[in-house]
Image (cartoon, one colour):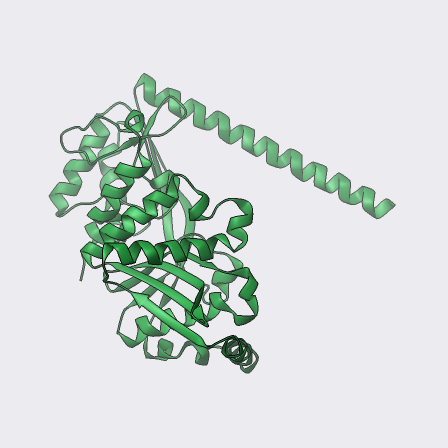
Length: 341
């Protein structure tokens, strides 16, 4: 079993190297210091230190270490430098939380606040056939979607883990094209349209395949790709990075049918959990209401840079609170006006 210092796939070298190369331009690469991992500057100034890719991907991340002593030394090195530190979405039960608290004590102001959790499923043999987890109405919906797919040429599922680099690029082209045909294409957030995250996830997929982590799932109807998942298998879990489906085939239920297939595959192979990553949403609530707990860690050292960053964060928090209060007042007044008319 993978120990805490490498529990998340975002602590793996493939992720760390890819985020550094593709999401951290030279001007945001913090100088390397003894005892510290590769770190990135946040914007705007005064700069804060964070993990590369943490803000761009918004995935749970953590420091990476191979021993308790290495973690303690890393925390002490962070506490000695003069910049503010921002570590979003760290697992609440990670040993790094206590190590950082101990290292930061007396050296500045440390704020640890709850962060958005990520959905997950604890897998067991009952998930080997996920449809049994649903009521008769939902099972009927699944069968209806399958029948519709059969009428269009038949249903096929693929999970790719090892292939040639050229074939992986072809499959990623298909996956990116499928995702762009969903609402993500309309909002411009699809990987095919993102000049930063698109190349990053492609490069990371190649590195993850070489390391044996990649799980690229495709759902086809009549041979045409209509559903996709980019996931990783790490520490006996499946970690879901990206999903998408072709909205023109919504009657085939590509999102749910592909999810059902990959969950069943993970359970049948004896994996421990299915991690949705990201944030809870209505579609994840369809599968689970369990959430992993995370915290945001911020440290403001007793330095001019650290205290300027603290003042800036406090000012932004006050402005956000006032804006929220003003919006609530506007909504209430608008609602009253509607009731009067």
